[in-house]
Length: 364
Image 1 (tube, helix red, strand yellow):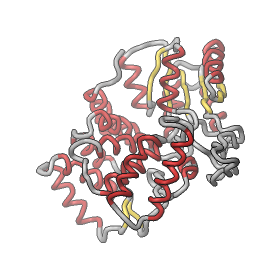
Image 2 (cartoon, one colour; image 1 turned 180 degrees about the horizontal axis):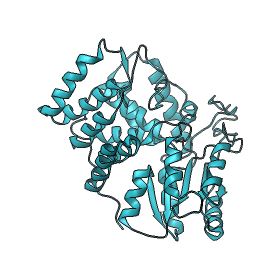
Image 3 (cartoon, helix red, strand yellow; image 1 turned 90 degrees about the vertical axis):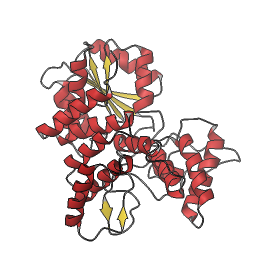
Image 4 (cartoon, one colour; image 1 turned 120 degrees about the vertical axis):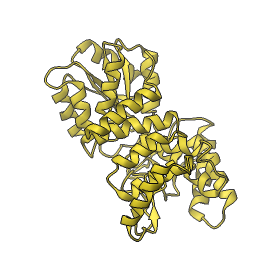
């Protein structure tokens, strides 16, 4: 079964918005933007369901960048501007949240901006990945493209927050070449270049602080690679990504767990929804593989609880089902799921999902 199309995502997203489920609507609309960033309709709906007026105006700015003569967006923007008052001097370039001074990390989308060491980009809390993916798609489309240094900087920072270090480097290098005087950016770009050279082009591994606090690991002999085995904050085990597997079938749990461990992941198991919530209370995983049909709490309810919890809302959730139907996929999307897999899950399909949603060694 093919993934949901733009029309499917918009239909479910708009239906969720009209029913008052803003969180589910936001997820569908951002996914629609990722598929077609130059289409103004999902941006417009995002502005309508966003409670923060400054952020709503930011989304409307995207609509007007795509379609400057969009009458509905212009009228709504004028009404918003009359109620906003004096604008904040700083706004997050990804979510539009305003502040009185520049932030090191946006309190809204959790994107990190100011850090000259690569290790700092591995620190928690995680950034809002769906929003950042939508922003990257928009910036790279004709309506968002620019040759200004700020455009290169935004794409570089977005890719860093997504863990795409190889993709981030050329944008940061261009930002350095087109601007001057930003010593933090120069140091960050230089360290990223040196680290990529050490790791080898295209390597997905990410260095982690030797003290588990984001500090840089000590270098040993010349040419030594930074350690990648310190304890991860909040989990207290070696820095291998943690996957929570929730399924009432012991066979499925065993097969998936063996595959995860053989590929360098750590796995923790739950036999039903209640156990899953207990596991989430103990530690925040990098990914949840969540069965739909379970006793006590089904997967849809568990997923909604995960996405409504401030502590776990950014954890990717992949739904598992024995049925391969569009209705189940859309219902999972409405609950906030990030992806869907049909059981039995073969090894290659599982590995593709892992590399997409929880690449080894990368910050989520």
